[in-house]
Length: 342
Image 1 (cartoon, rainbow, N blue to C red):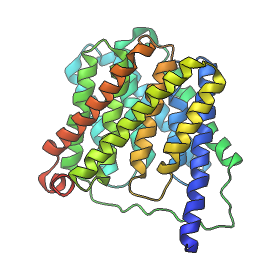
Image 2 (image 1 turned 180 degrees about the vertical axis):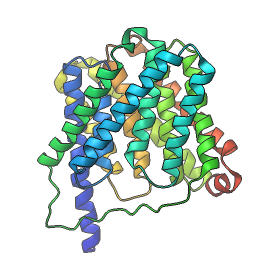
Image 3 (image 1 turned 90 degrees about the vertical axis):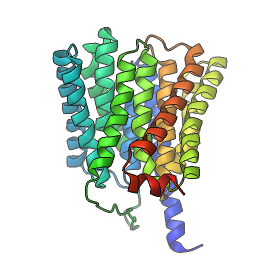
Image 4 (image 1 turned 120 degrees about the vertical axis):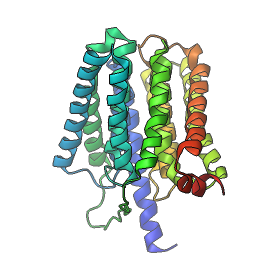
């Protein structure tokens, strides 16, 4: 085994341990504190940790935290002012989604683009579908950002990256903006948001658009129809794991059980998501779906009963198939042919 390969494996182990530690500890503490959205802080921490093998500089960390809070405040104001004017509101949402997808297509932005998308999905849905939570959205976001940042630094303190060792960073090739593909992605995501806004089911609202946004960010790794199907199956596996995990939790409900369950799953999925490989974002997406579904299961949100897990997995499957099929139809022909016609 070459020295470079050994170094990559060791780096993957450390990164995977950080992700598993931050996610399991953060999720357990959030449940203990009665957080309405217990998966938000751990999800942000996982995105921060998977973005690099080195802790983000303090300035960049604060910048990303401020960005998420500012976007959340802006979305809250837009939801309050324009919630009763759907045409204008959806147009502004589309502009935000389009900007994020354009940034993603150029290889810039890192995890910030996905996190902004998550915020721009959660805030309008909670603000419109659950009026009781509308006034708590900002505090939920601030708590999530702060906890995610603290978890990130805590994980690096427990599992530090050796500074005497040169850590290879996967180079991100900058590309010209793919405007047509970004526009197609905007239509796909906005369509899923509209479907949820016309439904009274908060569970569907929390799962479907985030799943769609996650899959659209992963489709670049799919080089053929077979790879695309595998991508869908891995993401669906995250939902199945959440269902199994909740069933296990009901047998022995306790904070310790939650910690162990999330730790095991985070080691399984987070370890693969930490690798220097093209399929790493797929396992990161599966971890995202697991955290959302399992988090909704233990959340005090209305409609979070155990019997709805089968329905949630059906929503995830529908969202995955919806995103895959529409991307095949709407993506520019030269792009979609490379990925789906092999």
